[in-house]
Image (cartoon, rainbow, N blue to C red; front, side, top):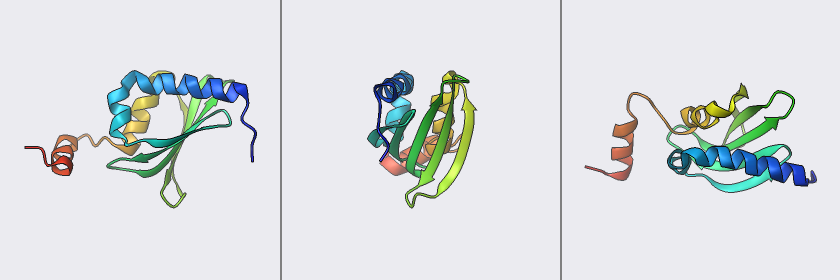
Length: 114
């Protein structure tokens, strides 16, 4: 088991502060089971497009993020490297939740909104 350092915890807080900048988007992912990992965070999601786990790793040398998306079986579905801070939430959202053409219809159907 990897040892989580104080620096790993600081990185996790840094990432969560970025994600919380768009809290309504974050909640739409149905996120839970948040864990601090080496140089980042991982959490479960229950979105329209992905049900599984997201892992965000911070690369201090480039000041960018690498995002891995896994299904519920632990299979890597997508990897996005070198994500800028201002694109972090939107990059995750496009893989986990948001569908450009039919998102509103899908929300209405899922939650039986009139």
